[in-house]
Image (cartoon, rainbow over all chains, first blue to last red):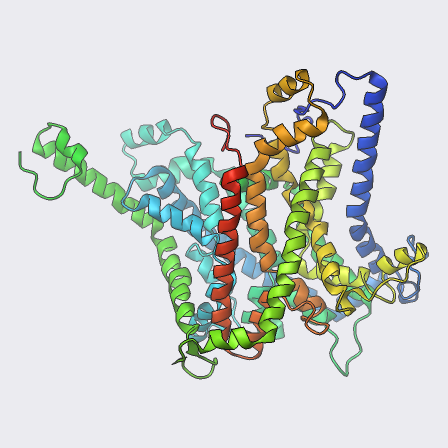
Length: 304
Length: 319
């Protein structure tokens, strides 16, 4: 499987350049045309990012002029300090991070060990249970949400982080990662297990001493994907968290950009400054861990 | 030899002493025990957070249930209400139109991106990153950004249209243009499938292209007869996941339009959210959720039925 999609040398050009039999000049022209298209499409898809950052740096007078200017006359960093003064960034960040850490720890406990059972152990109903794992991937979140909400209400957990973190301790929402870890574990040679078991290791010992230490790439994929998914999550916090000191960044942002009757709405450049800050984190994580992202995404397509 | 309880046939066939068989069985039992121990957290989660809620919401779908009272059996009342409710049909139409454009759109654009980038080009990594990056943007921030881009007074979209001498529409403020605006916003994230398509393209054996070229097949015919069939399983995968995710669009709609103007962007989940968390009709919301499940199952089945005729599974390569 082609896993090194970004790192390393460019891929072998599997599709033969269109005009291998054609003369070099037409080949060059085609190549140039292709490159031009790549650049133009890239510019189109990059433009909204540019617009986000530019608009967040412009003074009020400039963003509220029409037609808009593509290159700002004045850069105003103060937009950021001003909007941060009105936006509870640190509190939101803290709340978001608490949820992220909770979910990560929960998944770390529940997911790899379940995947180990599916990858290595033989037991009754194994195939059916694994089909159920994959089946839960297809169930829309919104079907289970009403009864889940009522469970947590009856437990008195509304307006706490528990409904957002505790389910992951029981593998809820982790079906894709169970699949990912199972695929990964199956690529580890079984001889390691046998050797360890001859040395007197139990099955759980094999998991702990042999399998898990080799699974660092899969652990990284899960940790990164979960971080980004939780950072971006909106619906869960929206229905479970009600008091603003519990809000995640996404919820804070939702409240911040809302136009409340009777209150002066936040200027667009200030809202865009916060939007930029919220966007930077997943984008930076993507840059830092591109290799793991690619691997995780490619594995997700294998089941197709 | 007396076999006491229903032993697996393999154990019977092996003519080994009874003691050895029993020892093997206990080993198997211990393995099964260890397995279920490993699965215990997930199994509890499956029962508590998936299986029970599925059954409960099916039950609520047949009850009159507002969050403050206990559920009262109401038979098909919720479904009758649904089929009389113009909002339900509006949400269905809006979501179907959106999906009808967005699912093929993201697949085709993403695939074309992959075809473009499956060559040696300068700054290849940069282009791949730029094409893929929009799918990393938090829905909430992306929603506000696009409402700003499509702002009818100061937005850059209408600024560009103005340069061309066109007076831009109201976009998110117009009943006719609100869906196209959402579609364009979503198509911005079309690069999310890029990585998968590239991986699939690189697994197509180059011998096939060489053979086709010797037979005189041009670029278009090679695409239609080799590349597309060889990568069709991945296309099927992205189509199915695309249907599932686009049917569940919610955050952006809540942030930008709240379903307006005049319910022109009342997506299915938005309608469900309003029923359950604004109007507190949990029974009706559950009925809506189950209808959603049925729609998704039906669409997925249709996709797989079409796939049975068109998707090509290479017998000796990756699946």
